[in-house]
Length: 168
Ligand SMILES: CC(C)(COP(=O)(O)OP(=O)(O)OC[C@H]1O[C@@H](n2cnc3c(N)ncnc32)[C@H](O)[C@@H]1OP(=O)(O)O)[C@@H](O)C(=O)NCCC(=O)NCCS
Image 1 (tube, rainbow, N blue to C red):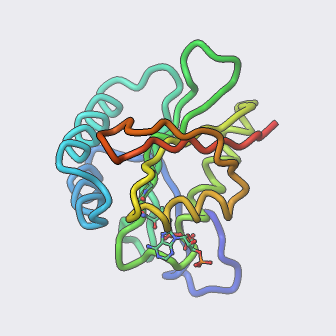
Image 2: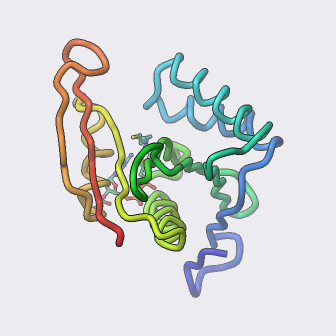
């Protein structure tokens, strides 16, 4: 249990491995954030199904619960062909529960797990569009460096931003 010490039990966030029965709720929560395009939601479903069918290569999916209800998700993995570099591929919190510190709890958990696995570097790729400004602020607030901008990566006018944090 990842604690918010002093809070009633129902308000203590819990992070646990993602299981098959989470998938539909996670898809619905991801859709509800309005942060992801329909094809990205499809990719998320495929990724979850593949991960749950045969987890390989040290990938990790975790579900965040509050008061017994699913409210968030993170997915991270070692980056192939690198020396202990990791990528955080997905992180989201249910829209109505955003800005309450839950994303920070998830991100800290991810960093601690990667540190425990002797990870050296954590990279996060995100979008440069205006609607992602709160997301970019979230990473900057947590000590991530704006390491690169690849202009027009996702499509014309939608840059890829790569955030980087040294863990070890
Ligand atoms: C990004 C995200 C995971 C952060 O989780 P969170 O629980 O909202 O974040 P926290 O409460 O721990 O941190 C809040 C800080 O993050 C930023 N932030 C990010 N999203 C925010 C939102 N929707 N509302 C308010 N602040 C937000 C702000 O800088 C805020 O700092 P402040 O409280 O000093 O203003 C979550 O907002 C989310 O799911 N967003 C949509 C999906 C997304 O963008 N995922 C990342 C794709 S790369």
